[in-house]
Image (cartoon, rainbow, N blue to C red; front, side, top):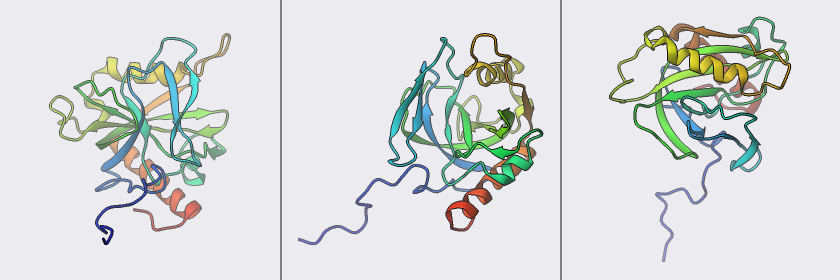
Length: 204
């Protein structure tokens, strides 16, 4: 009996084996590593493509949105030039937070997300941007077109989480600066180009 040829035999690597989305930088695909209900930080294992436990969170803080990355992106030299004070990118795929009105409790999933803005973050000289997006077709957040349209308290929660989730006693919170959709598009494009240069293939 012949084997079917219409399906992929092996699961693709979430970072390298999946497309970045149907229409980046505006409409991207996000691979979810952490949900708003997690107090353990999960992270993709770059070699195997499986999720692994990175660390338990020091406090009870959990991300206020789905948190993961955009496939086939990389925070390299182009990303570094966009962040004041950065000497290099953090060497990871581009982080993304996706807002959803309905609670999504599963991780290791893909969601289609519309980019609306982002947060600039520089951690020990490494650029570590956080793209902010809304779940495509979401009944509450689906009409939001720019970060400026979000309730300020939600932006504050995102900033607080990323400013403090690595915080150790006596350390100062990291400075976080929100930015609009236009800059977010620039960041996504830069991360796509960084990936293409580092790993091969045309930037999508």
